[in-house]
Length: 270
Image (cartoon, rainbow, N blue to C red; front, side, top):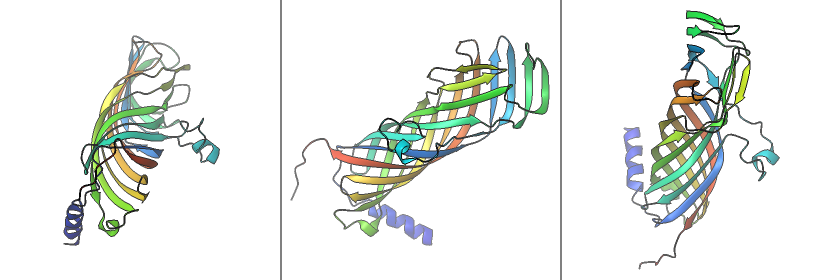
């Protein structure tokens, strides 16, 4: 009953329009992320094998003010940015990037299936588990797992601040679709290649966040996002003959600072 009452309160609060249709917003911030396990399928003329249920982690940059807030170093940590437009007082469309970092956990134990035709690890693998050393594989979307997406968001004003002209508090729910443009470092059997940026696949996401306007034009947002990545076209050695295919889910927490700006002067109605 309490949950139902709270939900109805949020819905009724959405009637408090903010007269921002036609406004532009922009934000920048940083994230932490996590990933589900995935099957990494490697294929080329020299090998065709799968590492099953591989684990991976993010790689957050240790906090240093001159890195996170320096103009030349803003893009080193795991960042988030987005530019959006209010198509109505309660809906927006936006375009932005989630710069995630996906790093295969070194020295993990995993099952391998398939064939490797050359080198130290040549042989046929039939699902046996092995500890995967660094000279077998290092695999990182570390510059990074870049998710470029279009999102639609719905805004609900939280009533506690609805009558304050300077401050506003909102709940936001939405989702999006997009493409992944990773820059992948691969060390496979001792052959290290830091690949180019390329379109590797596609995905979708859902998000929920809260936004606090501490003055009318500036806001802080904290959000949770979950997404799915389908990557059939990850580069291994820079050639079109060697590819990795893997699919996984991810979760992200992020905080951003942003601003909202009218694109034209609005006429007030009496």
